[in-house]
Image (cartoon, rainbow, N blue to C red; front, top):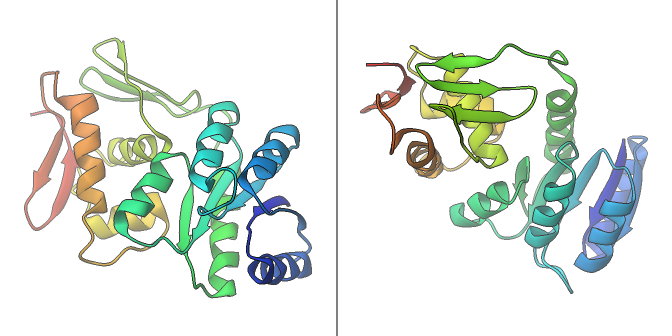
Amino acid sequence: MKILLVEDEPKVASFIHRGLTEQTHNVDIATDGVTGLRLALSNSYDLLILDNLLPGLSGLEVCRQVRTQNSSVSILMLTALGETDDKIRGLDAGADDYLVKPFAFQELLARIRALVRRRHEGPATETLLRLADLTLDPSRKLVQRAGQPVQLTAREFALLEYLLRNQGRVVSRVDILEQVWETSFDTGSNVIDVYINFLRKKVDKDFTPKLIHTLVGMGYVMREE
């Protein structure tokens, strides 16, 4: 893979660079956000690994600007900011995964492998997913409710797609974390509830019938009442 690592701590950058090149990856390094953004937009990378607290431009802003121009590149946030709100901001900015420092290098490699699988699996075109007047196009990344376009972040889209593919079946928070995030949060984290609320505001609040339902103590289900 061709990887861009944007990290301003020399020891951390050297450690990651050495480990990834030993795995036969081709790794470029930027030590500030401005340079990282320039490289990301002027080269074709398979993966961006971004620290958040960067000189010049934050990793979060780099992520946002890259994502507006490149929807296909995988982005992994790698930062010491480990609160749930930090993770939500990173994922909402367009990151595909979020790993908190300090980290085990083998976990970083595992997450990179997961991102590669996610990027390459699936057919070129897929059938529309439908429930009532809600439609989701997996190939074109488009969502409509009652014929109206619905704008979702990358993580919201992935969550809605998972719920629609399992419509009528109750899915637990653990199911969602494993299948949508391919990562783990503290068991007491409310990140799933936060994203379910985001989806409800966008696809349910102004429409009838309601499609996203909570089963207390069990999880969530998408179905038409």
